[in-house]
Image 1: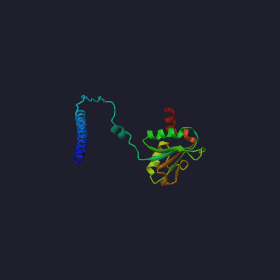
Image 2: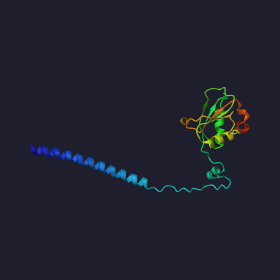
Image 3: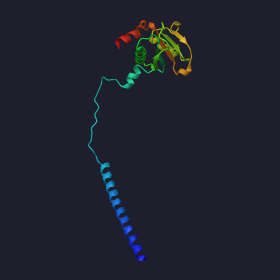
Image 4: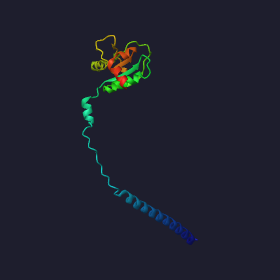
Length: 174
């Protein structure tokens, strides 16, 4: 009886050894295949850049018109469809960052209002100058600090928007 148990164990070991051997052969085949694919030289590619003497570099463009550190919101207060979006493009052409463009609380603003939201007077002056408004014009300029808005200036577009030449010309061109 002891003899039979040994024969059964030997046959189990034999099957286990054969399985391990086959798995080993597959593993060696995989490693060989992987190493052949990983070491291929491939086709050499020659990279050439076209010579452009007339196109400016990004640095040149920035030096001509640097991005201003001004954050504004533009609100449509007169109801003309798409006016806030067009005005956003106008400000961005002047390198002023518009972080919010939306409708105002109402559509019956007769005058465009530029509201300073913090102590950054340079931002207020730059936005006022883009409308060709004097920073001392109390009809169009308001001081109403509100740091929670995250903007330097709020612009509420009124029904007089067409009276500002530079922005009106921008709308006509675009």
